[in-house]
Amino acid sequence: MLLNLREASGPLYRRVYHALKAMIRAGRLGPAARLPSTRLLARDLGVSRNTVMLAYEQLAAEGYLVSRHRGTTSVAGVMPSRVALAPARPKLEAAPRLSAYARRLVRDPLVPSSASATLPKAPRYDFRYGSPAVDEFPREIWRRLLAARARRAARESFGYGAPAGYGPLRDALSEYLARARGVSCDAERIVIVNGSQQALDLVSRVLLDPGDGAVVEEPHYSGVTIPFEAAGARLIKVPVDASGLDTSRLPLAGAGARLAYVTPCHQFPTGVIMPLERRLALLRWASRVGAWIVEDDYVSEFRYEGHPLEALQSLDRAGRVVYIGTFSKTLFPALRLAYLVLPSALVRPFIAAKWAADRFSAPLAQEALAEFITSGQFERYLRRAGSRNASRRRALIEALRRHFGDRIEIAGENTGVHLVVWFNDVKPRELDAVIARAAKAGVGVYSIAPAYTRPPDRAGLLFGYAALTEAEIRAGIQRLAEAF
Image (cartoon, rainbow, N blue to C red; front, side, top):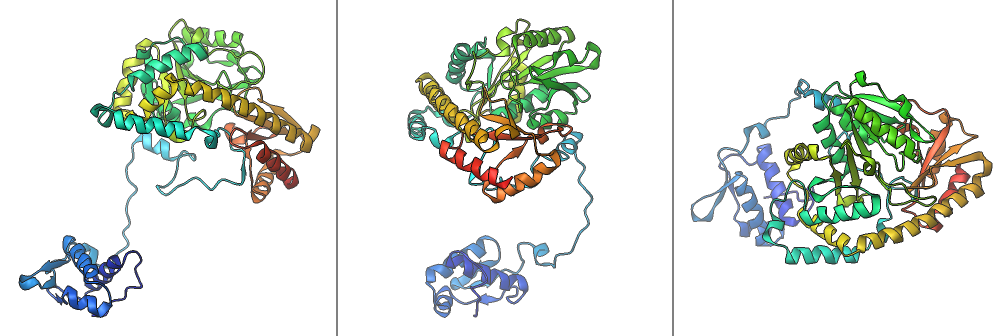
């Protein structure tokens, strides 16, 4: 028997298997046709008998071969799937009937279009905003914590976890948030979720009905529009000025606004900080119109100038603020752990929504994180990261000033892990060409325009700096200047 083993790849037994299967499916080995013994075929092919035996066993398991008396092997009389043997015919299928939720979701250009969609390879000098310095994370400490938890963990840690999250982690967060951000809460009001994006998804499911108004900042974090619009909400875009969300432009009571999503400690993308007067005005508005405030307190841990303001939630006396925090920007994105601090009235519905979505978040990761916090490692790491980020921020500003001088204006540099650069001598329509030239030079820079509903009348770029060394920052900005 002649088999072409070159048309398939992989282990030798898989190549024999594929060659025989192709002959059967093509009809060259018909029903009940007898195959050579494993010893004889192995000799003809110059392979081991075990290789042929494995191929025969796989074909028999799939229903292509049957073993007869006295050890003979034949092609099965009936194939596993007659449909599979028929020539493929093009079939016109009607578009599937999707729910209104799914139709709204798939229209969003930010949503991946296929299962094979992956992030593009990062350029050599990538100023992507929001990326932490994952190379600086104490991996050995984290590895030991995970290994120790896996060894010592009770049986429950390998089973189903509590929807609200691991109790000791919620206890640790309650103490940390009170100390670091002035957040007033007990552990019973904290729900652990799989990243801040799941937090926003739960917010949309619990607090929004189709047609409800949802206030978002303009410009705004584009990820917030995905769950809100998928829930059928009407986006009410309120402009941001030098003091953050302009509270004088908030909708009146009859406008149907159910919530307002804000980033008061580091507005995304502009980086401006909302002063106390505006925070109090926002809280008064929420109480007056019966709306919820969703406070996204991302990267509030990093402030380089001035005295840090506590979270907006710390001022809330009426129980109107839903507070979101995440570890993706401070530790590493793959951890996929974030948390909600909820008003008492919302705890039960949010736990129910979390349970319906995915039951619980990974227990072992939560246990390791709880120990990382209670042992003091988390805050020690934040102090090191803050010092490192300050140096990298300074290097970025110096490099930008050196190469671009008064051609640029820098904004939003006092907090967070990114800043904004406005170019005085570049028109907005020219910016895409600049970004493309920078990419060819190995530099990744990102336009601020996608954060706006209508593109701004100035050319602006976002520069993240936490994930680059000072030397990489200087080299990257030099290459960027050469690309202009």
